[in-house]
Image (cartoon, rainbow, N blue to C red; front, side, top):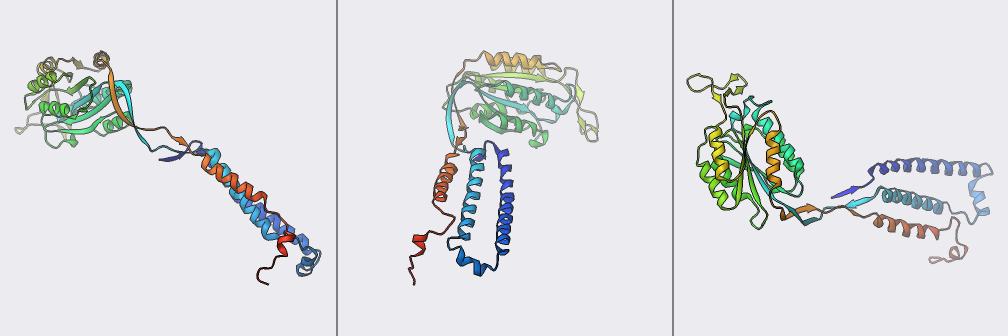
Amino acid sequence: MFRFEHSTCLYLLLILPLLLALFLYYMYRKKSALKRFGDMRLLRPLMPDLALKKQYLKFWILLLCAGLFIIVIAGPQFGSKLETVKKQGIEVMVCLDVSNSMLSNDISPTRLAKAKQILSRLVDNLQNDKIGLIVFAGDAFIQLPITSDYVSAKMFLSSISPAMVPTQGTAIGSAIHLAMKSFSPSETSEKTIILITDAEDHEDNAVGASEEAAKQEITVNVLGIGSLEGRPIPTSNGYMKDKDGNIVLTKLNEKIAQEIAIAGKGLYARTDNTNSALKALQKELDKKTKSEVESKVYSSYDEKYFIPAWILLFILIGEFFIMERKNRVLSKIKLFS
């Protein structure tokens, strides 16, 4: 990857056409002044050392040097080298429920929007940890592999919607199994799963999957999202209805959510319109023992200004030896007389 550290300095290149215009005007005035004395064909023998071509050559060289000098002060840099960096941290896999019930607005603005807000703040609080993202409804899919690229993590968060998983349902067990397989196999750092769901209509053995994770020393933390009373699910045509035409009510299945957290030896917290769940989760993550994790990162940009600087130096040295007048000794050499 190539860039200029001080890219605004490149605007100085706009001066070069102005210098060219001034030089051409100067040469025009010079020729006009000579023509006042007489015909140039008659005057040329009186000025045997005059070399207009060399004056043009010296100007073009100096104009090139000015351009190179501007490039030097702009600070050209390269930085596309991928390096492995070792840091102290943990690995976190987030399993986010994106079923239609997450569109309910019993948590403001909606369950899904609130979950995304929590995850965004969680990413902001990460230091040297790795994070991955799995979305699930009737099926589970990896949205973001385990990484330390927090910018990408937040970018993927913004695009999450129920439309990403066409099969509806709440396959919590599948999401947990997929998360267990998604951690870095060679890492010895502590690993944890964060499950954000309303735990409604779960279709597989989520508690059993959580127990399996605990046996592999992977804790499962659960954020239950939604109200216990139940709310309808908004749609473009009003509210979601069942096959009999009745409005579907969705509510948090807190009992199942708590059982999953207990089986996974992790934290359970109910998410509401405050930040209490996020604070509890952050406190739980801070308890984890930080150990060495490897991350692939782009190295910092290397300064490459010396390349145009050396070119500039050699060109200036060459320009120094170019005389504006003809060399009397060299002019007497006639190779093709």
